Amino acid sequence: MGNQIRSGRHALLVIDVQNYFFDKTSPAYLPGSAQILPKINQLVSHAIGLLRPVIATAHRAPSDAENLMPDQWRHLPQGRECSLYPGLIVDQRIRRIPKEYYSAFFKTDLEQILRQEGIGTIVICGVMTHLCVDTTARHGFMLGFKPIVVSDACCSKTISHHTAALSALGHGFADVAPTDQLRNAGQ
Image 1 (cartoon, rainbow, N blue to C red):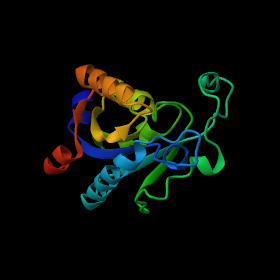
Image 2: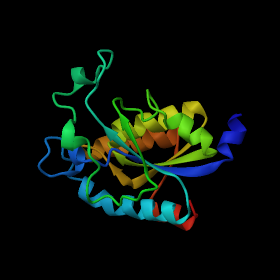
Image 3: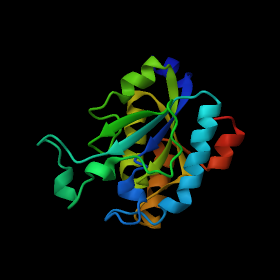
Image 4: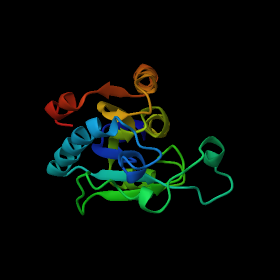
């Protein structure tokens, strides 16, 4: 089954492009979000134009006591903070998945959706590179999906977190490439 999955189609995963990280008034605002948003929108437009699935996640505060995220973070997104950022290209064909863990696969229907669509490769952009992007890429890899992380369409709290995550992902879990390289290759 693994070879069949890897030979499948591509899907774009847009990780947590939501008010919590992109709105300047948010306590979790990421300064790098303004630089990556145009690249993310290019990827979304390109994927929609190629009729490739686009799935956008939005992180939210946990609903179960098993989730350890509150132990790590003083504030987790709620209400308006969970909404997709208004600057993101939104199209009725974009699927939206709420998530409560770093991995977009954990306790969501993402894997089922990708398998039903015959997806073999997941192109990943969004935030944060060293947390949700990283964990989603690794989890996808372990499930048999080929991750491609778009280096200039992701960001973290610091550039060192971002570059360290890209380096580790590129070493053992994912292809890492800039937006232009993906668009030119027809991804």
